[in-house]
Length: 182
Image (cartoon, rainbow, N blue to C red; front, side, top):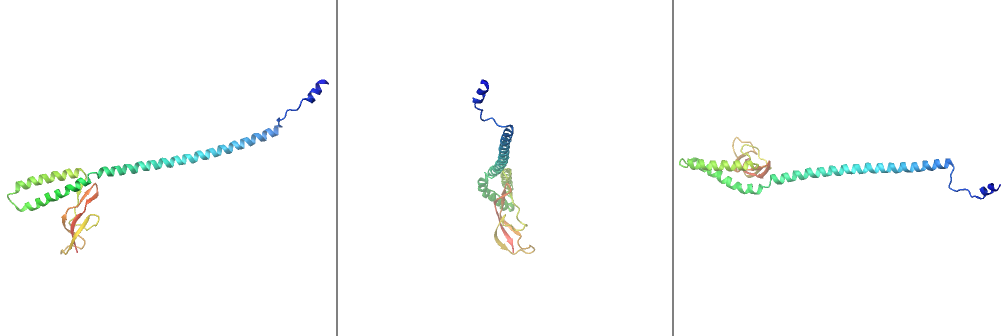
């Protein structure tokens, strides 16, 4: 009997739970972990979406920058070429004025060769002369100096060119100075 008394005197250990309580506690923890997991998955999805957007923005920025740099490179010589154009104009006028002089034939041929060589070099750098005479007047390409009456020509047509217009890589470098029919 002595042993029974010791057993009775020994306090019961607290904290031991009934099996049903343990199961509900585990289920509660499991539900909490599932919620945490779902929250983490949503955050991962949001971060992946954000990453994709930032990557797309970076790609667009790279493409835009490449286009801008390409434009800068293509048009880097615009100022130089624009300064050379008056020389081209003078050579053209010289050639036109020499057509009526018989003795100047060899000199004319020399000037023609220089003019052709210069135009070839300018064309290699993206310069292109505009053809204006006989075409409709277009403010994007022409500067009208005068309007004139010319029989047989419909209104709004370029009838004469006083100074050629030029394109550099498809963009207007200098507008053509023209006379337009009324």
